[in-house]
Image 1 (tube, rainbow, N blue to C red):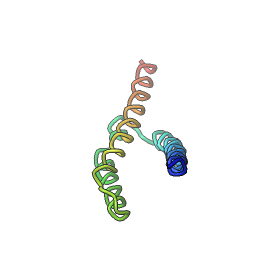
Image 2: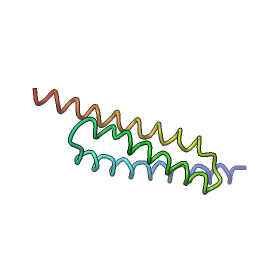
Image 3: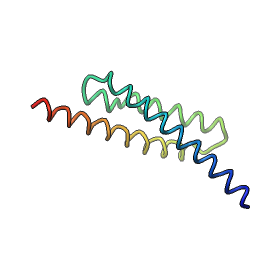
Length: 93
């Protein structure tokens, strides 16, 4: 059982490392966005979640959990970007 738990811990560490990498790319993409609406990018988010659901299904996972996880992740990053926009807007006033 300990071996299984250790393997799960290693996988979780790898996932967290990849999320950190993803965050860097999200931050880089934010620099190209011209306004808060571009940050929200509702159509892009919808398409991205659909693609993640397809990937989950292809791997034998229930897509609902992957969509839920990615929705939380994306909503967090959007909130962070919106906060940056608000701070930028306040500095310009």
